[in-house]
Image (cartoon, rainbow, N blue to C red; front, side, top):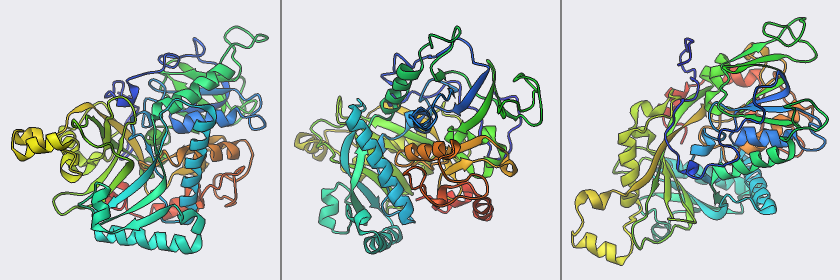
Length: 512
């Protein structure tokens, strides 16, 4: 498919054909097949690679007044807009307030609040529904760790911890529909949403405001935002030394530092932002051991007749007594058929999906697990009539133990070796150089992180604060308190490369 030899752990390009996501059932008429100009421009101030939540919000922040005034932004997407991880996730935004560091917990709550306010202020039709979030633990040591971290947070950052509490009561666990859990953390900051529609609104808004023709410019010119779908980036070329013009093989001139290669032609860029998450290492090989593609799987399950609606979003973690490891996540759709969107089951799949960058196939073993686990673990058997049928054995064992899935799909996550995103400039010693930036590696937890990671990297990119490469000032990026653990530094890379690989850490359940 690629024509190049991939090294161990390196991602491939996105699959040309992908499994059908529930979120893509109502594609944007504006975005489907969209190309703002018939051909690629020869140059751009900023090329954003990827059109998911990171890329979309980065483009939005780049076009804010006072940030990138007059900046020409070109967004390149290998497939349709928002067709990668954002358009394939579990549809929930739940910060982890019992994270390893208070700075990370604060950042995630800040991101959640930003999205909540944005949706409310603009009336974005993405079914944003505030909920209470539940982290259900099936292993005592995981519960103990979460309780310890939350206790520390109560003492050090009481405002941050105010919306969360530990639940151990069997009665309350049963009321939360997790009777098999040993305990849980329940928190106020959580929501479900239609992620594709959120990103579609952002991109459509950018096209409306900045994607039209500029009257005083030549044919095909636009007002600052150009979206090109079905245009995979196959190679990045650093333009060094002197050169004449921006053609292939030319050196850096007029501030154009990178040549972006695609099957449709080349673009010279002053800056490039890698917002392609699990596919990052396809373009920068040095990230092959830092951000590894991992395939996840999700199902849209049809609720049983008379089943009570869920009033929480869920994360299930640990090893229950009756089965292998659980690392699953669940919401229920607030509209339509009330489908239960359940993702997870990686431990049942081939190689647990680690190192896989193709989302064109559904694992039948994982699919069977997702169709069955809720009926068993959450006792989702429907109303009284349905329970009576089960009790009277009017349903067969297969029918009783398995829910119907309207959609089953896969998506590619980017697992970071230390579990934290990589945000900042990519230095030359890491395969980058002046003008190449990254915000990626969310380890399946991008919804409460990616939007403000995009803001932070844009502020750094446009000179608003912070340093890339070998350091960071640890301060705010225009109001965004980016955790130091997220920054791209030499010290971090050296430390991370002394740790277990992503596969080794995953085998030890370190990402729970």
